Image (cartoon, rainbow, N blue to C red; front, side, top):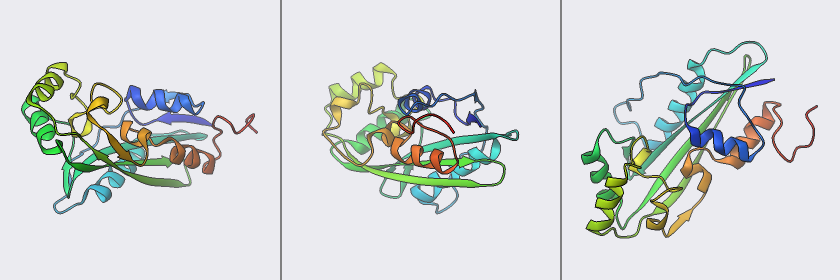
Length: 194
């Protein structure tokens, strides 16, 4: 069985390596990621992961793994900031508050599909003007849901999480490993492939 990663995220490739999985090919889908009117963060994220998996063409014997990560401040969806001003707005909104990070994983082969969402609560410390300015200058906010990377320079700004750290990074490993096993794909610690 060959695994297709339906994502161009280097973080997702690194996380998969932690469970002994190396994709056979990468096929990042191009889909419309606009939330629907009134759509909440959890349904939106799950829909995005499923649509990404459905948009990737696979051959017989291949499975595709796709994921989506969304930061939610209440019912507000904080996607990837369009520019530095939006990233600053996100940081100010999250400063001193708890929010949720939703990551959905979808797996599809020819005849079946699986999906799972994981919600993690995250709290930012109250950010100083200097911390906000320094983080914006770093450029790390680019391409990151909610405008931050917990595994990078934002790590020291986050004193508390409840849930999956790897889910916040972009791929909840325990749940991903279980989905791969359900599809018959071996992961680390499973022993030799059958």
